[in-house]
Image 1 (cartoon, rainbow, N blue to C red):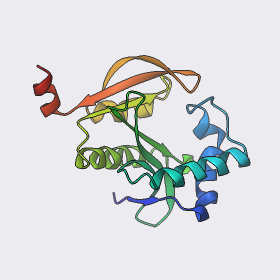
Image 2 (cartoon, helix red, strand yellow):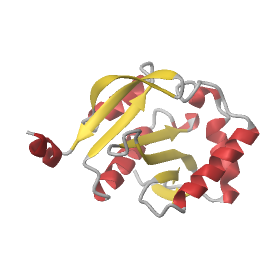
Image 3 (cartoon, rainbow, N blue to C red):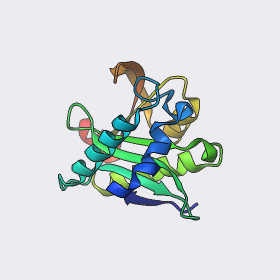
Image 4 (cartoon, rainbow, N blue to C red):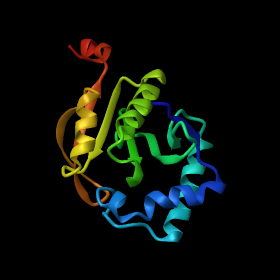
Length: 167
């Protein structure tokens, strides 16, 4: 399955709006409610501003082999600024087709290529599909955290080199 990552730009408001305005997508994200148009516009502006930081992090629009926008992937520093968080959001019409797993793998591989040896992901405990994807990538449940006003399960992944260095 072929997926392409593209940086968002100011002309992509419609794409990002398809994610953040969808109640089924948003039920496990942030406060569980779709964003307003103003909030979506602010989110896109922040995403674009983040690119200017010059780091190998941020948000990417994800397209399939047919050039259809299927969702969003992210790689961002976690609260401690040591670990990096991976994330992926798939539009509902692409659910159940393997795109979530491939998107997670794509951003996971990018993080490793960029030299990240410790990765985390937070997931709503009812999001069984995402939990299965994380476990398939080798992430292990660590603890429950409060993020964006909600309780989330935190999963962590370490490279073998990181594990050996910690012993």
